[in-house]
Amino acid sequence: MVKPDTLHIQKPFGQTLLLTLAFFPLLLGVFEVFSRTLLAAPALPPPSVGSQSPEFEIKLERLNDWIARNGPIDCILLGSSAMNGGIDPEALAQAYAEQTGAPLVCFNFGLSSLVGEPAGPIAHMIVEKYHPRLLILGTSPRDLSDQFGELARPLTQTPWLRYLLGEDSFEGWLIDNSSAYRYYLGMQNWKNPENRPVIDEYEAEIDKLGYQKLPNQHKELVQLEEVLLENYALNPPDVAGFRQALSQNQVGTQVVLLDMPVHPVFYHYYVAGGEQAYQEIFYQPMAAMAAEFGVPMWETQTSVAPTLPADGWNDRRHLNEDGARAFSYWLANKVAAAVREGVLVDPHGPISNFYLPVVGANH
Image (cartoon, rainbow, N blue to C red; front, side, top):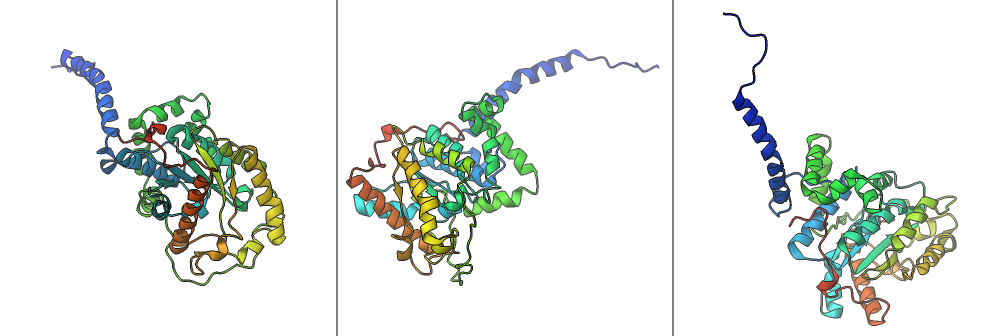
């Protein structure tokens, strides 16, 4: 018997193909619904918005998970590593409650290498998607130096962030509207074995309110008397980013610019020229920029840093968990005082002033 040299498709095969095509959109719909529930996070790798920063992705996941489980956030803290490990949201909430009778729920969105250039688009995203009543921007001279930010600057090219800024992008639109696609991107990241240890590390270290504490190692500090920034000048892309972040001071969201404290000895060596240069080429220009947008800038180098615990420093620019707790108490008292004085509206305002986020919400 001669075997046929062509494949004859039987009718059942065609029916299977048609059924597959019919059910595929249904399966996608089911996965989309599942991905928006609280059951998805424990079962799947962390979702992604397509950035190249696992830290940014985990912070976003933590923020969305908190809101899905607990409701809106009162304030969001944005800054570099000094903010990331320098303010403990739970300590801040406790101190604010002691002053006002109500806790202030804050999320720490500090990112290790953040500088001004990407801080602008991220601040825009935070206000557009989460509408916090208070956005506290941490800053220091390195945030406006072209010598820093090599890991954070690529965030400005993230299609999702560019889409939120008004750029036409189908991928950005899809990320913004499909939880299933965000989990798909997360699974693609997870498939790369080199990514897993980094993702696992951030998952373990970043707590439910975004805080990544630096344990007190009781070690001797070094480089306190070495200048960090020679020939310092404000970097134009970072200035533009901070201007964009400050412009988020609008109806519904109040912005505060916070000069992040450094070790009192190192303050003299942060920029060449000492304290006077720090004030003239960094603090005063930043305070003037903030004033253009009606934003207060709070000084810490002379009023706060010397009062923090002597063993509260992880290094010359970062607080450890003991220092962070003390600084968080100061910040809570400062916010409470600003509310009493009418500088700020109480950020623990009515829930009606908030709405839940669209991106990555597990609900």
